[in-house]
Length: 305
Image 1 (cartoon, rainbow, N blue to C red):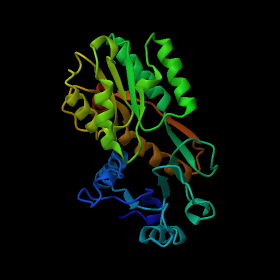
Image 2 (image 1 turned 90 degrees about the horizontal axis):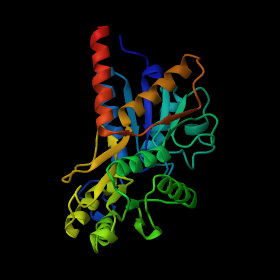
Image 3 (image 1 turned 120 degrees about the vertical axis):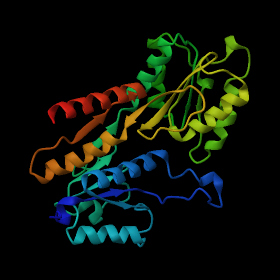
Image 4 (image 1 turned 180 degrees about the vertical axis):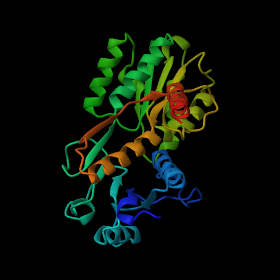
């Protein structure tokens, strides 16, 4: 017998609209991030394998008269949602039933504490960086460059402290910040980083966003450096949907399958009247650690069956 909508419909809310790959302005074709793609793929998988109805809503931070915005409001007003999952922090929704209507569990991938009615799941970006630097140090690398989409004064200071703690070198001019939606310029940044004599350029490279991995590789190839002989590279990924690689790059990231599962579990616990943690942290894992964990879980399942 089908489950009623109010216990089986989960809204997954995205801020912007998917943009087709043949969009007339290719510099904006990657606005629909790999993180969003990974969440969408896992929502589809959960729907197919578990029968949970994962409803996708796009462009919710845009105009309130969009079709998806009104469709989401309709589900809320008719009490047809078990809960709402925000792919990002729910900006610009104060005063809206999407954020304020009572009786609906909500979870956001965001820092905690801003909206008390929204449980937060935070990606441990600081732990991610420390683990990436540990990997490079274990590979015997000492001169490390960073390519990232954002580096505020606090994270820059944390980076300096983490680098110093490992005896690494990462001067300010090796910390390259690229503008979001201009990811094609990453190729030039990486090419520039890799110019010069081997002893004066980075021998390790950290890439903090999976959307720029492709252009990082293009820059490495254009510079004619060998990976990992000349430079060891470790890059961000959203598992199990990592960015395609043509070079032997180490991947480190977050298990999006586990992340979405955590959201659904939090919603279900709240609906059962259980006390759910207001703040959950998702730790970074290396690709091989994720595979080991998956095999271990499958083995336990087989034994228990």
